[in-house]
Amino acid sequence: TVGGTASEIGGGTFANGAVSAAFVHLFNAEGTRLIRDWITGNGSKMRVYGPESEMTQELRTDPAIRHHEELFLNTHSSIGSRAYYPTEFGITDFLFANTDTLQNIGSYGLSVYYAGSNELTIVVSNTMGFNSLTAGLLPNIQSGPMSSIETWFWWKEPIK
Image (cartoon, rainbow, N blue to C red; front, side, top):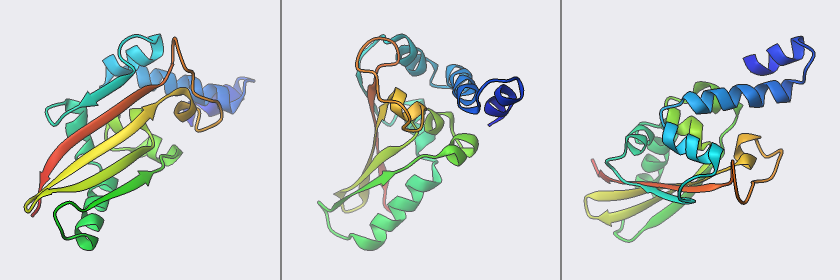
């Protein structure tokens, strides 16, 4: 918002300023390697982060994920049950998200599974791409710099 407003005051467009500010934020975020690889087009286009990953650990604290875990536990009760919750990420989330990782991945799909009588498996999936960065205004880039990276984050959660 600040980048967009400053751009407009300076004679540019709000959208261009907001996108420029988003790039600065993304480049300085905690998941720097993932962001750097996305910007440059380097590295694997499919990444899986397990429970030991710092980014996965950050996602475990997200209130929306905690909410959907509770919703799942209140509506499913048997081993083998599963549910999928698509989550949209908006400008408010970008400004006030509680982790750098959530700001970096934006919208995501959340899958919750009963892994056993006392355990859930949580999987967060996301396509990190230009479409997400521009809030759906522009399509994803298929190769080269800023081409999409599929990211998956997973962990197990004890049922309390």
